[in-house]
Length: 176
Image 1 (cartoon, one colour):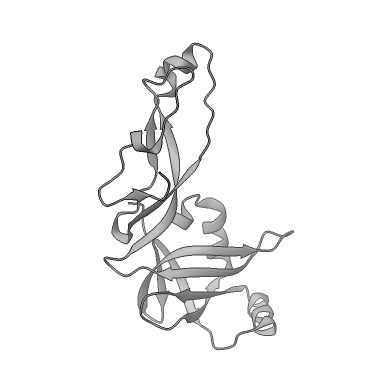
Image 2: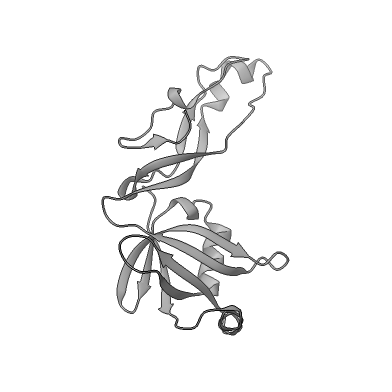
């Protein structure tokens, strides 16, 4: 499982377009936490922190985030981030509560190992990647960092299907 990302959050009362614009002028980003058995919680995040995670952390949407809200920590999984089409600044972020024992659907990156040993590539073949991420249903506590696909025995013309990949326990793909 990947490291838990820490973000600072503050509660917010106002909603709507004008409230969001006023919040963004103070270098904060509106966000919401939903799911679980609680009501949705409106929060704001520090723009610099969330922008750093969106740009520098390719596994951000498949990792658990600890939101520090008024001295209390809320475990969440990022669901969606809206960004400005030109500036690339975050405009709004959605989070899903991640209670212990619950399962979530996340996209996990695929990592290819043993490319240098692959007989098909050594003979001039080309690796054609169909899916760079695989959607998995897994417990919140055991979201894998990546899915490793071993290419050591792959010949020219071979396909590697999800059934040939070893997944962690209690993790199932949404594709067959």
